[in-house]
Length: 164
Image 1: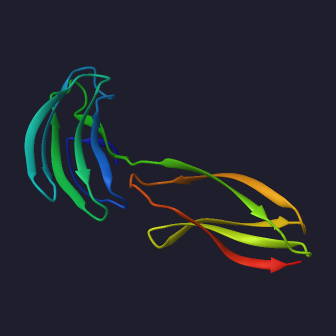
Image 2: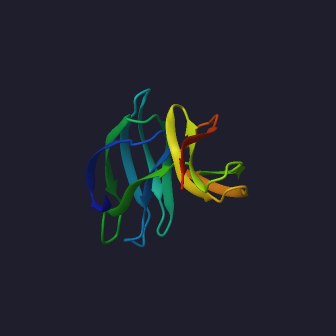
């Protein structure tokens, strides 16, 4: 949202599950601001106030599943020149790196290629085609970044093989 003056309503629907912060930062007025807020979450409602001193940040932490909505409103007062505050919603979503390795062996008499796919939860997460000469082998190290906090069981599959 950015800079908000005096009063604001908001609605936000998550695109992925995780921890989210409703962030209030006083960067516009040299005096402390008072923020009265009312927030509606899927499991509860919050209504409180907080003081946000100059150049400081306060936040409300919430846990939300994918597709859930957080909504609410807030009012800002107490400033000397401005009753403005910087407001935004920050997703503390996860990323994780998955490292794996494998060896491709071509025992045939022709050059060939293999398409390797990394699967989890019935979904292909990564794939790449590798060329291996006849009678040779290839050792491969790969890393894939995932944008979730979930635990995964992985399957590495030869999805396709071709001669030539």
